[in-house]
Length: 438
Image (cartoon, rainbow, N blue to C red):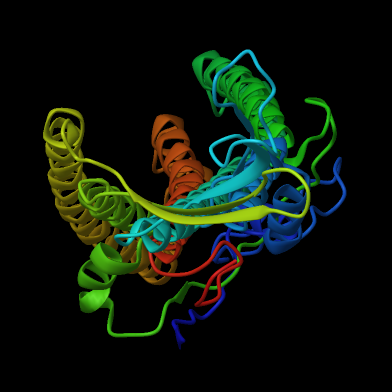
């Protein structure tokens, strides 16, 4: 496995540092993150993935279909049931002539149809291909489920980080309001500045309410995957796992995905099953065989034993089987084209996800190394100018909004990075993030 690790840095300035920056002329805001105080810590994402895989009814249904296909495989190459016949043969009927005439007798015979001409192997191959297809479909369902859990978990992280930023911002605004109120009382500021602070606090409240509603929606969606009540509490997500890409150079991922993605595997299994149907249709063109025998009583101690071999006369084979063979050939060609189309689509999707992942990874670095410290410095500078009477309060609010937005954007970028990584990994690994099968 190739592991890409990033240096972890705090997300938003801690409140004491921000308050000190507002009170002292030359302070620089530090960066820190505090999880949402009102919620416990959420379980790790892999814990939720395991829970979803264990509980999902849809995945259990796929497992039942797989088990049914495996059970059916045991009967795929069974011979048809034999036919037993009772026979009474009388010469000069209705007179009873058994014992008087060698043509009169009574007995039992048994006939067994055979699956010759490759029929038995073809039926076993079809059942095997069907079980393999069911297994691939279950793998696809499990991978899709695990990926959806990881993507929703990333969205919860972005929401919770933004809520933490807004919580700290609300405290900063309270101090700003106190400062502006004091300056207004001293005649050093106008009423408009005080009203702007109050308006900003209302806007923060609106933004927090929207986030809370969005969190409830995402939580309900995640609980559906976990087979939990929609309002079951999922704790605050304060961190995401470090990015982990599957083994291999990232640039080779699109080609790997075009061969290994669960969707491609399902299409390949469908193509294999269609090919087996063609082989079975060809085998049906060959004549069928049967063997049989019987014992007949002719009266007294006389016995007659009869052994026979039968072969089907293929008078109507072409009329009955040739259209079925042509239809099976058409299905095989369609399955091959579906496989090619899916491989192309998956390769394109993997290439796009790789671009999204790489861009998000780079942008997270830009936010942490550049935009966040720069916005803190700009907020410090505009606040110092305002306190010194050389700047206006509108500039302070503009920098304050930028300070909030950049930290919320960083959380969203981190969520995008993890979601892209999860979708990429789903194309070449199993639902639990390991190479191999479920």
